[in-house]
Length: 465
Image 1 (cartoon, rainbow, N blue to C red):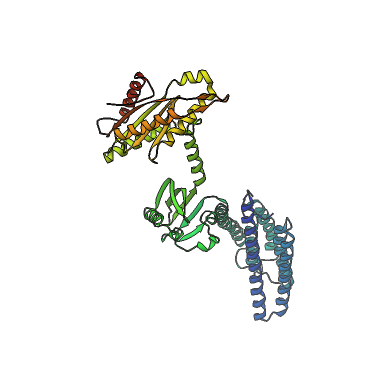
Image 2 (cartoon, rainbow, N blue to C red; image 1 turned 90 degrees about the vertical axis):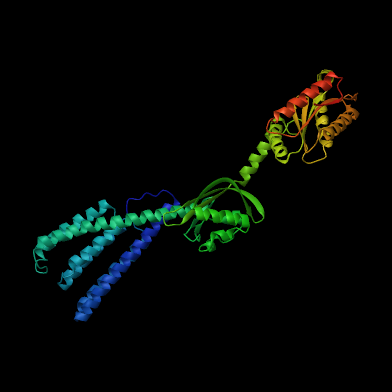
């Protein structure tokens, strides 16, 4: 197995990085071997030692051919076999030509190959085995070829081998960390559903995720590299937003509305500056989630039986309308409507028929409200409320009377064919909001007016003082 450092294969991207390291290491070793052997052959030719040049060239060709052959076979012990072949072949060639002049230089080249391919354990084994051989060579063969103390020379080579291991291991480890991070980043940019963008200091795109093709309709995301990030957005307001973010170099906002190709989409936007004056952008498309949330919220504000807003929706609406009327100094009117004798109707015709009456009542109330700003909601049971913005007391009483009369004229058939009728009582209140009163005032006043209408015979409207 090819091992650069002790790296575990964790996923497909880790395997990809390891294969790239293996490929680069093979090319490096092959190039170094060709370069070294070529220089040796050329040096012998220049010196006129043609026989030596032929021997060196033959050995070099054999070793390099063996390297190519074994690397393609993907033999498990290939690094060990090749390193030993390099070592033994040069010893053999040196004996053949009777010269050990370049022995230790070549030995360091073998150690370089081992440092690239081996882990620490295998490297130390190779170093110890070859150094034992070197001891015998030093004692019996190399004394006549090396100047100075042979043991000092031997010790220096041994220490150089250890230093070479540490240096190469450190360099390869750092390279592997960078490559692994790059591969992981590339995998993230390909697979994430979010739009991830890395910008330089001039807001030019360095990297952008593949999801931009789906969200922004861009067919070739790779072609965006080097272009201005702001050019992705055509809408002026959106460009201004991101220009402001680019100036601040930091931003976070949930549910940001952005115009994308004529469609309003919702994003969580995150931006933060990087150490090299660049910036990281993330656009998380939450349009679908927002729609589902809005639908769920809308469902929670609708009365399930009558399909009109419920009391919760009314409480939100009256705050907005009260504040708006207060700002614009106009009337806000409220009708409190109650179905007369509803309990008796339920007891006589049953709850299902009572539900049908409530549905009919809700439909009549909505039908008699002509403006889009008019708002009707079910308070609960047989009580309903109507908000009329910009409507004075007289206008509100006219609408209330129209509702009362429409109800009075309505006929509801039961399941057995009985023709039934019902009436409503209405309390009316109209005020111009001021700082001295709150929106609760209009509800209380209309409720008191409704009580007066019931006291005075029902099926009538009563206007609050």
